[in-house]
Length: 236
Image 1 (cartoon, one colour):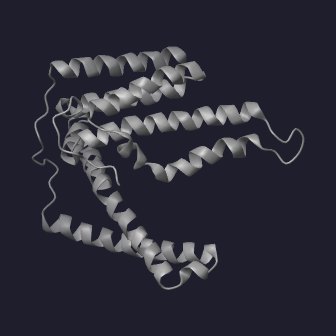
Image 2 (image 1 turned 180 degrees about the vertical axis):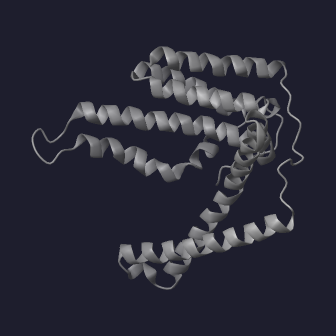
């Protein structure tokens, strides 16, 4: 399962994307400014509430499983030493809290992606940043959201092709090199096709994007985002 927009009528679906971006940024700032387990424990139900508001569940969080091994192994690597005292619990605990912070941010990010279309994300960036800089940033956001699933699919296909040809018996570095070469080649090919398609369609700096407007529900989201920003500033 991959994380992607899911049509619906949940609370988060009805919010302006700019308000959701502020909540996401405020949450990330607040959890990074929090250094105590108690603070992260208080942030946990808020992250779960964001995902619930988007109509999501554990399946949406599972889409970020690619980061799970790193988050689980990092505390062990940080805590183990090659000499006396062999294990440093304080360093392991600090790294474990950092991994937990990243996990909470993934939950809130899953809520945003699930409840926001690519065009809405592009419109939010386009309208927030003035001028051509905003147009370019909005276009970049849209391209990233559309390109990442394709790049992941290309790498998965390359990995499966290597194994289908007996690559499982080759050394790890040989398999990694083969997958990387195929992945880079396909990425460059896609980039060339994208450039040709954008030129053929006369890329516009002033595209027709969905109209955005703040409502009553957005006032609550904006207040939450600003409150989280205030908490982060006070903690810092």
